[in-house]
Image (tube, rainbow, N blue to C red; front, side):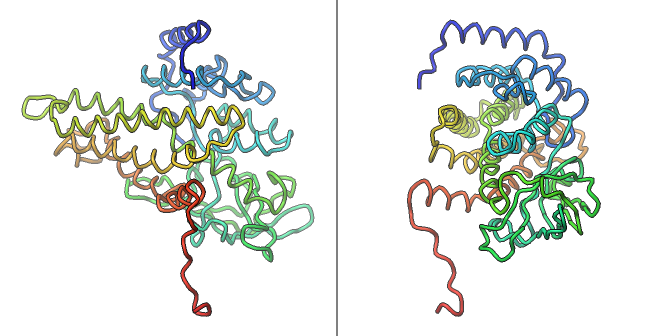
Length: 401
């Protein structure tokens, strides 16, 4: 991989830096979380799309910038925004997961109807995958869709539905052919969260907030035309989305931003009159994390390069979610340790640092090690698909003794 900047790329880098210098005051605070974006965040997203710093390779026909893929320009944009401490635009389930799925498997009508409003932040999506009895074994899901004329009638329940209370739309897995094997007979539907029969109940986690929800469907009518892919082949479509979800959770740019914030914390906070950075034990932990973030960054370039060249990323893609989620949690853990007694503060304590973001992230990121496919499931995937090891034995049933 040649990462040498040509005169064209050097000129592009200067262009990005000039944009950041002139426009950084328009950027919203934060990174554009999964909830409904503010008007300020939507305006920032529109400006980034206009200049090609968001939705860069999405065709203009679908509302994107329409640039050709260029791994070095992607790297230049990511590095420039990270070093400037400027949010790179909206990042949520619709933009990071559904849009690439539609680009790959959606109809032309679906692409033209949904991609533009989604990347602009006008439409917010949630994901209807996990169920109370179907988390790690997602293919065993039981939410069913029976036929009634031109509609499906959906009954069932989803859980851990992030953004369900704020979402306009949902991409949802339902069983349309209950008599087929569990990986068959599943369909991937998109429909409005305002459809009659949908009830959302918040789930408060150990962070003290309700990032997740349970979602109930009672006789929810959805036109049959709102399938992505083919009927009964939703498992194939779902896996395309899961691939993009793992990429979203493993974004090396986010890791680099968190590491940068940790470095600033350790430079500015003191103990016994000395900067935390002078503590050799904590500084050694920081150096190890810096090395791992650098490895994730270049692994991300390997995955991006494979995607651009229509090649299989293999092991490089398989390790992303597992490594990134655990690494993000370790960064927050070091921040809390570096803060000492201040690291245990929460809520509205007078000496709380960064409004409690490190404590919030520490708890939330622990959950992400479980969400999106648990660490144990990810290790099985790496072992079986990446290393070619035998599948994990299934527990013996009583009749199979």
